[in-house]
Image (cartoon, rainbow, N blue to C red; front, side, top):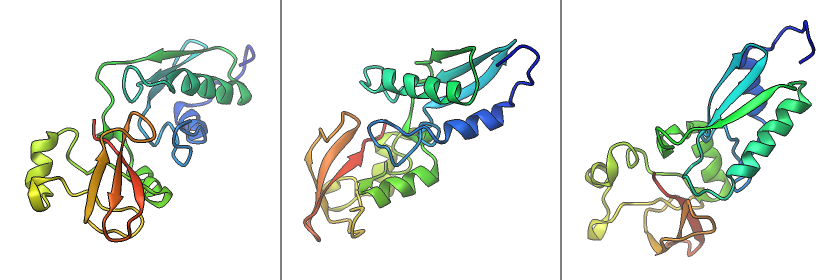
Length: 175
């Protein structure tokens, strides 16, 4: 910002960051995924706290660059991006709107309660035949699905297939 300029409030800045897509899943933003944890001003320097989805996420540098580019385009010249690894990111931070967008995009969103409550809590609530967690197909809604591989198109997703419509899909793993 230029000297003497009024600094934009942090709510407005978070609104700008709503336009920054996740590089691996561009249908959702970095704010909707809960990756951007906080923004604040330290004098005339804007500080953005970012928590990657996991410490080895290959998209972390790209996300930081996209955030910086967006903010510079909006006139913020003095900024710092801080990476926070604690507390670790959790799928509980994904907004309901982002979960809906993931489903519409063909990715099964994380099952509620499996991150903070652990898999045991989720199993008590949503067990299917054979003692497995029920992952609904994002295309047809069937719970008759099976995990094909623990590893999907990105490290944060697992590969599944629907037994009803036979379509393959990714499931956003709970962390």
